[in-house]
Length: 573
Image 1: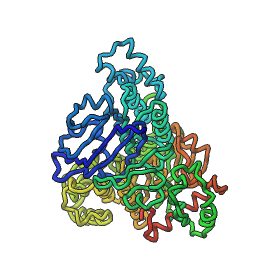
Image 2: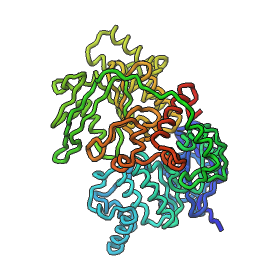
Image 3: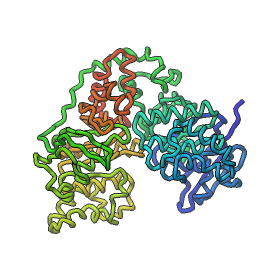
Image 4: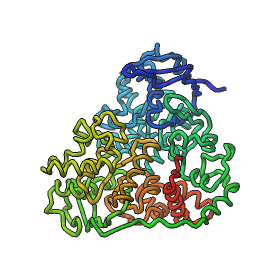
């Protein structure tokens, strides 16, 4: 018999600082031992719902509760956050914000120390928790020195040994490379099964979470639950595209082929679903003649020649060589710590090669200042808020030209052009604080475009964004490339982004370039996938199951998908 452990009845929550409620009419029951994915676009109320379960709302974030929320029988508005912490453990999206110990062992032991547990009892429990997450060899390491994936494991171990009944994972895949994301999903699944925990996962990346089985998906939009049921029924519907969630690639391929999807077809498991009813249509669609996408590429504008760079004694980049041509869209991909971001800093001149050369338009850049390089190569950070320094949009965009002593006429013309390119001209006098995250991203891009650079490098341009905002930014960047010939380099973990919006992938592993080829060739090469901590996309799996060549199948999908977008029919339509 099912035992309810989370019960919302006619529940609502309004933050004290807001005029309208964030959550409305929530009626939701989660039973002990269930594994539930909470899905929804940015601002849909997912994190607020989770914080009502773990007690952060209203104890840390003041607000007004209506209706009832019971956790393990406790009415949360009457319970203390201490009492709730004995039932609910939360692994935050930002692991660094969760660390309190100077070593991994200390951090895992923190909750036990708060309970005044004797050391003789504490040490074996810490070792057990570290063993469950595969971090036994790192107990003396400093948490901040670990990779993103290792930090996630330590944060998880810290809540494990408290014997909580409910584990909440808030965007556990954020900033993880594809393979580490898959490992994290497998680890969560193993803990769910072996520890019999109730698991709630808050995440945008549906296809990645579906790597392991989930019992239910709760889809939220504008503070309301719009779907609560099994994954297969959701995948067969149009709800994902309607509410701005990216469909798994194999589902997109099946819908492109005109397959009629039904909830009883095990759609959430690409490895084991019966594809025989769809085989004919999928193979027929694969044979449709499509004009191949041929990017308009000009002369070579950047050449990296045998570059080596070290921080101290540790080599981060080893004998790297590649070129970038005008008009290209290139993805730098690879696992955490592979050297992608260091390569970007090196291209921008923030650090310089210890061996080898970087040539810009055929000239060695060692004699150029960072300011001079910045006029040719622009760098857009992952978080736009870390780049913005002015209050008004127009002031932010003109800052670089003011600092270079340009005339008012030159500034006004360049700023007007950059703002128009970014669709921001009507908002030029708006405060930066008044526009959305995606629009702020455009402001940072406009502030770089004003200098008319040859190349723009974007670090994880879509990290932490739902599919609607992702599509908005990527279509805008695609237009900049297409209409103005601007060369774009993406640093990304997102294989969907690489497939849909780039022509070529430079793959990094352990500080070396292990592949430099078209995206479809890279993502169908088992050896490269293994070395670079990438993972095969579901298109690869689908092609294999259909008996088709994965490279040809992925290339055909990319060209078909681009054709659909060119005709104003994106996958999210």
